[in-house]
Length: 281
Image (tube, rainbow, N blue to C red; front, side, top):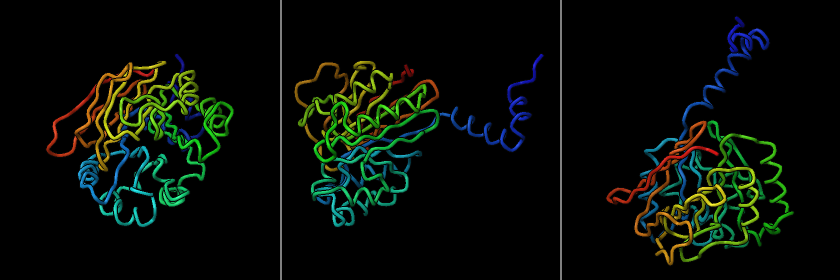
């Protein structure tokens, strides 16, 4: 009988290298938590204080879905409106850029604050998952169409990182039943992700919570419930399964090697919830 795989690895790599490999594999196999929410901090609202209090009790990195500090994403907006509530959470945040980050002309304040690449797009790993952050402010970055710099980057990133499970997030929703509605500008991103069999897309911009059934295989969520304000939903878009427009809260994703669980967690005093589980494609 051949030796167990771990023993073979230890013999071939050396004990120290094998221990590192075993540790990294063990970490990847464990379920991990990712918190997602956008449209967060305004000085005239107490909603961001409520969501910050909720997130402080939850483990894991935070996927912030843009529109982080209203109204213009300036240093003053961050200092006066964001820092008193969400400031201590900055080390955990993996941010996407929203339109309000560009309201003062550039998104330099947010890019510096969250140590983002100047382009606003990047990727990282959480457990066994590959996570992609895109910049949906298409007019600010040279477009989002097929062949654009970001589209080419996304195509290359998906080819390089062939994970079993993939999640992406940005600000403007591809599909939404809210006030701003669906964005056709990000359709090229969606099509690339669908062809690569990505599993989940997260977005903000519309200030409500919405979950869609899988469209081209991708389950998407709008989570614009970070605290700034709430908008009503309009006529439901095809594929819309759950909508709520009166509750601040966050989406907690439990990411497993072959699947995921989702649960919308409301702020204290509110009762709306949405939960489910699915396998990766």
